[in-house]
Length: 173
Image (cartoon, rainbow, N blue to C red):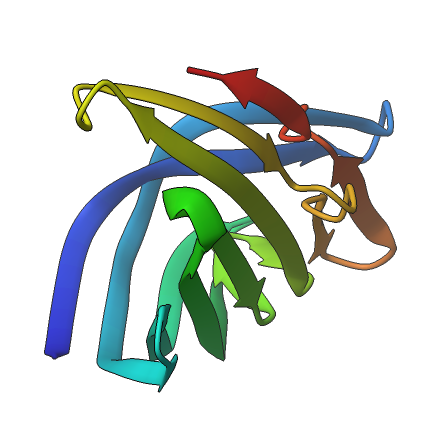
């Protein structure tokens, strides 16, 4: 699938710097525009009997034009995302599901995001003629889904964050 999007006055988080007080203020405002061109390919594949995969690759170019400090800033990046879903039918009709994702470096407004990856796993068993499902899943089992972002604004003004939004969890349904 090929996609193109051009948005004007896109609402983003912006930054204002007061050099006299060395204060940085973050606020919601409008970037001049953003452009995104992406290509997505999907490849289902049967590894063997009882093991199916569905693999998705997206390659995109993103560009943000932002007026800041009386100047124009262009933040752009070619990025990619690979996702692989595996469904394996185990003995006694137990279903194992694995979902792995890798996101390459990307941009959003003034920020650059580092690459990140994660792996989720789930096991499901049906009962009562498949009328009742019991499942357990674990998300981000290696604790790697950190969002590491940064922005360099003007001379020497650097903002860096390493955020983890508690994606690591275990669930029962």
